[in-house]
Image (tube, rainbow, N blue to C red; front, side, top):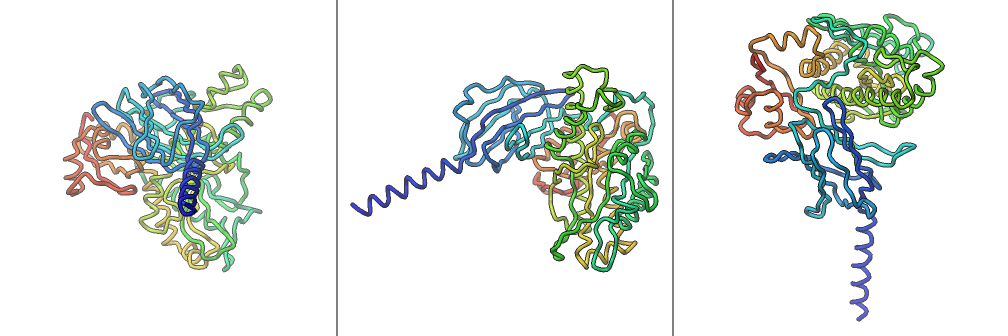
Length: 439
């Protein structure tokens, strides 16, 4: 009898623990604009998830490990944009959220921690196949054949040396050397042009850095740094984009200042807009910029991983001031740990600096040859060239069939171009995509 009670008590304890460990989906939000749909699951706690697509009919499936619907979530939101309907169910002890799709899309998901308004979230972005990820400024006139402009920002400078290594290597010097190498390689690329935020040893204020990039109508802002921590064993490169909290904080600041200063987003002044319209303009611009930042950042990570250890396999997000431009995709590359004596020695080597610069450029090139702004020389070349190879770096959630649909080629053609024996691909793998005229 006593042993039976112990068993029952243990079972009840396990059941209570399982309930406490479950993640509750407390709300589902959805909105759509300019060919992009965002679905946000508000969660009670962080959760592991898996996302994949199904065909016939087209569906995007999200499985949340140990997940369940909140008791108050009795009515799911109606569809919007690429999502016709949202359904839920349970499969293998997981909560399954199914998005019935109305069109071909490319998906990406990421988690976000709590901010002042929301708790933990799972964010799912759907981009209509064939539409551009890059941010087009409303103020730009259509000038076919223009260069893609990359603002290269060497971190620190002048009175701010940044981190200092054991051998007295200064971060500001390493950042400038790598940035000069990167700018030189960008300028050697047909259809690209670099703008150095600083070209010698002087300090530039963080907001002035993005102002310089915006003055030159940059399509991308890349800030170069070298990390440092007390643990000298720490090593590897990391790529950052703006966090959702950082984006919302910056949006609040800009909205607060719009009546007292000439605040502009993409060349459009906000001081003459009513509060609701100003907030919508900022939100749409920042969503598009953040999405593009995560995309280009993942491609840079893929290329860096070929030559150095990458400390984080995915783009990290932080509220870094230099990344807070609302209308321009921005990434920050921590090229290595200058506090690590081995990496410090490499950072001082011109040949290693050149390798880092080449890897960063390869990631940028991969992104823009897949998503060229429509009025650029690269976009025109992609359309005109009868036969060419486009490099595609596999991101989480990609499948060979989806990639084939996106580039309008067959899976067999991709397999042949890459000597693949099956449709299996892995995150970070680079594929050569045969793109033909008329696609």
